[in-house]
Image 1 (cartoon, one colour):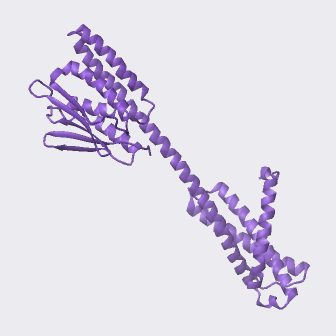
Image 2 (image 1 turned 180 degrees about the vertical axis):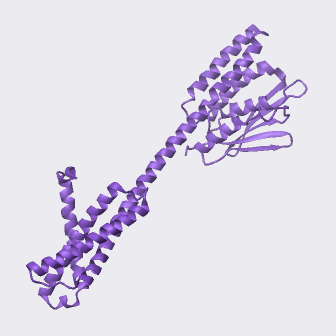
Image 3 (image 1 turned 90 degrees about the vertical axis):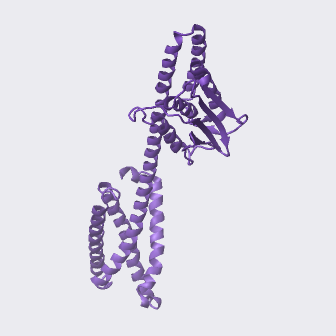
Length: 343
């Protein structure tokens, strides 16, 4: 409060308030006194009383409201705040009216009306002033709470998104190293090529860690490199096609397509007798990733669905459009919406 008293803006605001309250008291004086239209002396008395009431009731109740608000919050303890406010404002108003009536009678020898009438009028004025003040305070508190809630929500989303992205890198590296372990004993030259491609693929993984979305072309180039690694292992048992996507625009979640392709390897049989076919194509504003359905006998505990849930959760954080999954006619299909803008 002492800091406020030294601030010129504080006093400017107070003078502005006093002028506004005085102007409000003028029409109120005539509305509460029918005889004031004909009696100028009575008008002066009534105007003086109303001006004093409006100014001191407004400023006094404002101070009470500020003091109560320092200790009791509308947001945390609304009932307690309401009770304290009613008691505080009523007690101040009654006490102030009594003092004003006694002052006019003792010093000016003027009777300004009965206690009952003055208290009722003053309580009405106080109620109006208090309603305005508390409404403003409540709305400001609600706005601050909404902004704080939105800030916390954004931080939670950001943290969740980082956690989701961090699931990808160890998972991808683990599977790649497993493939390399099997290959290194079979063909040294292919192993060297595999390592070179793996370094390119993993560089892409590292480069996209901080990105929310990447262009479709970037992701497809990465997937082609990843498929090269898988073709070394599965040879002709793997059939992979990208159809009519040259020059296609739009963005996708980083590593989403790769994880879907990897899921196809994980959950389906790949052999000389049962070839796995994976196809990627565009349909309207969606990207379709589908594969032939030839499920492995995997225990439920081993198939947690983390990969699909990861992609789905990342899309929910970034886009209003959702990822959808279809399974029919021996085909498993995931529809990824192409992202134009991040929400």
